Image (cartoon, helix red, strand yellow):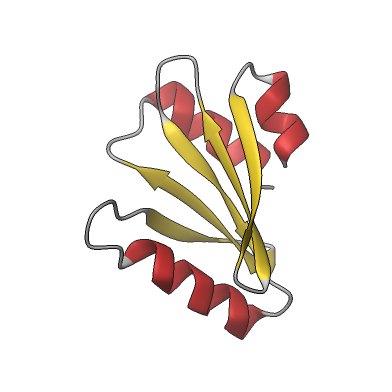
Length: 91
């Protein structure tokens, strides 16, 4: 995941997120996006809920189709290029 964002030229940080991991990426056009990964589907859902309920800086989350322990995350409105990158890297 992080390698995919880095290969696309994004600045990437990997951080712990509760019992899981969060990969944050800032794209060349200043898009904020990333990926959440939990050890199980229920824990991943809990982590995603925390990210989406932040009162000061909420993230939008969407589940990864083929990975019940992963969520794509982003802030604001995605450009078409950022949306394509997020879809590509979250597979």
